[in-house]
Length: 276
Image 1 (cartoon, rainbow, N blue to C red):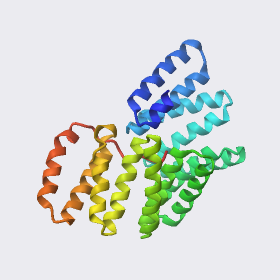
Image 2: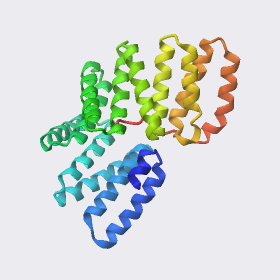
Image 3: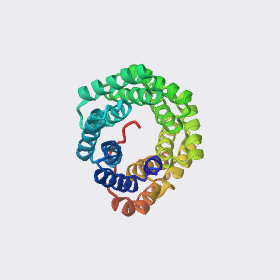
């Protein structure tokens, strides 16, 4: 249930489930159950921006899995820790961590964790300005996740591939891929990813001069409202206002901002989400 809640972006509920699991595992003296709970707490904390809490939870999960000689659990904890290190700006340590996961997951034949680690390596490389290297990592991750039918992970990697296509001026490729990823989000109920993909697609269409198409896409993202965190809503609002300005609708853009401003200011914005 906790994993299902995470996939729907319901991180507060997922965290509560993990805390209940932690209490049960502690009372039973079951260190694997405790490690699983710590892993869930780390993920929820990372997604809601509490990087200090995420690091502590992942460190404890890692120690538990290593003590229990659970290799796969160890790789999951290392993946979460690497994401947290990226968020904390410890890029060198994050790259070392993800490289270790790629190597160990590949040796174990675990395409899931290998793909996740490749995706996260790409995030780091793109952040350091290595667009070609990042595109290679993202593409490898996308192909691995697509081959194993892991739709959510495939969408995450696919959106990152599209981001690099956009960065490199390859707008047709980006648009086509994002449209396909949007269809997957819609059919599988990935509301949090749907918002992010819609925002990307709106940006691509605005960049291509398809202002009315961009406005329609961004209105759809903004229409998700409180089903998603504040950050993607703010991105959608800013993108839609900019698009309306392109359409010579400055008054409409200002009215739009005023309509949503009070609601969004009541919500604590989430930080940038790193690859899943």
